[in-house]
Amino acid sequence: MRQTLDGNRRALAQLISLVESNPSSAAELTAELHARGGRAAIVGVTGAPGTGKSTLVNELCKSFRRDGCRVGVIAVDPSSPFSGGALLGDRIRMRDLAGDDGVFIRSMATRGNLGGLARATADAVRVLDAAGFEMVVIETVGVGQGELEIARRADTVLVVEAPGLGDEVQAMKAGILEIADILVVNKADREGADDTVRALRAMVNLGSPLAGDRTDAWRAPVLKTVAVKGTGVADVAESIARHRGYLERSGTGTTRRRLRAADELETILRDLLLERGMQRISRVELDTLVERVAAREIDPYAAACRLLGAPI
Amino acid sequence: MRQTLDGNRRALAQLISLVESNPSSAAELTAELHARGGRAAIVGVTGAPGTGKSTLVNELCKSFRRDGCRVGVIAVDPSSPFSGGALLGDRIRMRDLAGDDGVFIRSMATRGNLGGLARATADAVRVLDAAGFEMVVIETVGVGQGELEIARRADTVLVVEAPGLGDEVQAMKAGILEIADILVVNKADREGADDTVRALRAMVNLGSPLAGDRTDAWRAPVLKTVAVKGTGVADVAESIARHRGYLERSGTGTTRRRLRAADELETILRDLLLERGMQRISRVELDTLVERVAAREIDPYAAACRLLGAPI
Image (cartoon, rainbow over all chains, first blue to last red; front, side, top):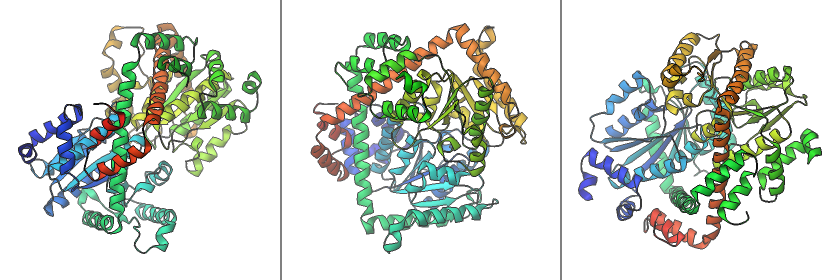
């Protein structure tokens, strides 16, 4: 496996697919990959559509590369140019990264089961981490609950906002600010940028009553960028490095790693429980009961209990 | 229960909470509610943040009320004024509906488990349907996968777009257009509205090759509205009525009801399987294994298998 991990991009992509698609046949592989990992800094980048987070990720990658880091990008956002879903301009911008062997991009299909997506993302991180990528960036669209869950398990969580989207309120409601280690107001050359910054700073201050009493606590900085011009991106990269230092110094890093392990284990447990449980259910009986539920002869709870062969 | 269903709003809200919170203790109730239902027209309204779908829902409700329908609204969208999460202007607009006994609004918390949310939404629909609301509108933010799944099980799915959000591409990628029975370009007094309409019409035509061959097939209309002024809302209401006619005429309604029953049954099965499975797992052993996964002594797949007491 060492050859594969040190080897070319195609081998790496195949390894991720293998681990993702069939964890049981890849059990030995997963054990070895997991044992080798734990060195990569995992950065989650999330925000509403239209905030320009893909462009920011692109610029951050270039910044990390200038520092000599190898960078892996996992794009869960369907609008990301990394997933192939963006406008032409975005695609042209991200061509900067193409052909650089120090950058590996993996796009994740967001259709279908989100549980499966969380697991697949964790698997991809495991491979990239074991392969020696120092930075792994997970980009997710920060609106759906499931997508948010994926981002929040990173070491450092960046939440990207933009002026004039009405997203301050949006974000606050969805709990997205609570998970932010670093807040970025992108498109900061637009009207209203300073208002957005002020609103976010006020919320950060409100949201961290403990932080005021502890000088060693992390208070999420609110940074301005114009990612299309590269403006402010160095500050974001520096904040990520500072946050990494904080994680190690404060012990928060250990807590996060434990939470991530718990989360990953629970995700796999859920997948396995569902898989095994559904296998035990008779397909014929299920189809019959669906018809009866649709005909309103039985309610779905009663039908589920009948299938599982016991009272709720 | 008849009294409750015919009774006041508070009793109705309590009934929904009861059914949601504890389906097992409410088993008898659920059976009766399910048997009584099946008459309401369920309309799903989804779209990206900023499209103004809440305002549209508000105007649609007023239109349904003018036709003498009782209307239930289930708001899963955290930015919806119905969920209490919108700007002041939106709240003022939706005050039109307050105090009208023919309108019942239920807001759903989007924090936490989406599986639970799908189930809770179905439960709320069941109660409102049984209580004789002729129209039930489910409003969800159309970006997350889970939220989309909730909307798609309606009888009629409205997808709301707005010019200049770059959402055409966004929506296409997320599969949101595929589930649309009616497409609405809201904020149609903005620049670029006609371009958005044209783009959507082209996609509808592309996406329905079969429709060209079958004169009885439904082709999603693309309608323009300016919901804040009420413009075009009557056309949307009329399209919903036409679609309802189509559902009954074509047998598509029966198919949708069966899919909804299958979906609901599967959601409940999953919830029950997970609940029962997790109960069997030793909490102490789980905690120990989380520590070992975090310390990279064991990988999460192997840990999950150990907890479940069998190979994957």
